[in-house]
Amino acid sequence: MATLEKRVQVLLSAEQYARVEAAAKRAHVSVGAYVREAIDERLDRKRSDAKAALERLWAWADEHPMPAITEQEWSDHKDDLLDRPALTGI
Picture 1 (spheres, rainbow, N blue to C red):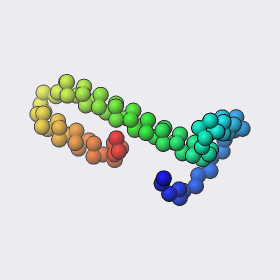
Picture 2 (cartoon, rainbow, N blue to C red; picture 1 turned 90 degrees about the vertical axis):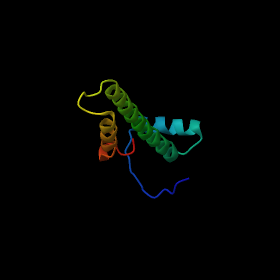
Picture 3 (cartoon, rainbow, N blue to C red; picture 1 turned 60 degrees about the vertical axis):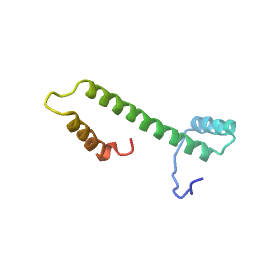
Picture 4 (spheres, rainbow, N blue to C red; picture 1 turned 90 degrees about the horizontal axis):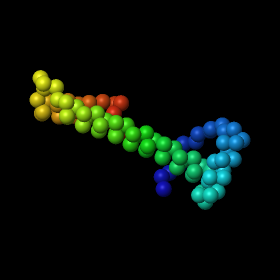
């Protein structure tokens, strides 16, 4: 297990807390562990969705090549795009 070293304070409504607490009990974990799992799942899903969208874009671009660009130039261009900070980790 990773070392827990950062603290976050989140305010929840009574209903939200009751729902989270009940879900954590059903999963036999603490509320904190349940929230951490939910955060990981959300971030992983968003990364996965972004990666899938990017792969669909690449597939479309591969099927509709620009007439003035070679296959190698397109491959190099895709690599350059993936090096951009906004796409890091996708």
